[in-house]
Length: 194
Image 1 (tube, rainbow, N blue to C red):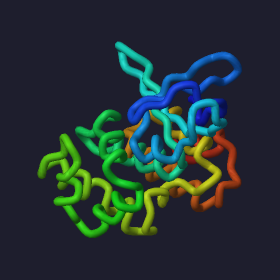
Image 2 (spheres, rainbow, N blue to C red):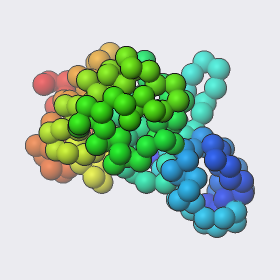
Image 3 (spheres, rainbow, N blue to C red):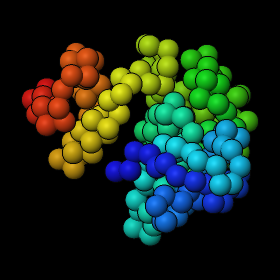
């Protein structure tokens, strides 16, 4: 998995970015929030990424902050929300505004996003309210600095047939208990035991 890329911007539009890294141009789908935070062409940048793989394509999504990426990943965990809808939500709402809408059960704010109806807004709130409300941020399940370990463990558990939501809760609890001082292998073993 590609956690981030660092290089110079060769092309930038409100929905797309091309970053040159060592002579290779990486095309990323981005939100308007990321677009607004980026400098002009030829400027150096560091973009956090998520690689979405389907039968037809490998699509790289880019985020200017780790918080925006975490919001994106949380949105993907909601039934019926795919990467295109998640990036549309993050184009319309900052991570803080999204968090606030979820915590206050504000379906109207979510419905203002193109493609989000009442049922989708309610589903987002229902499925993410527990994840946001406990600690007060979208990163509550993932201690900072441990994203790579978290993601690698989730991927491994998913390949072993563990349901995504179960794996997320188990891995987050183990990381919290060990305060991030754990290897991926140990984390996976503990998650399988738990």
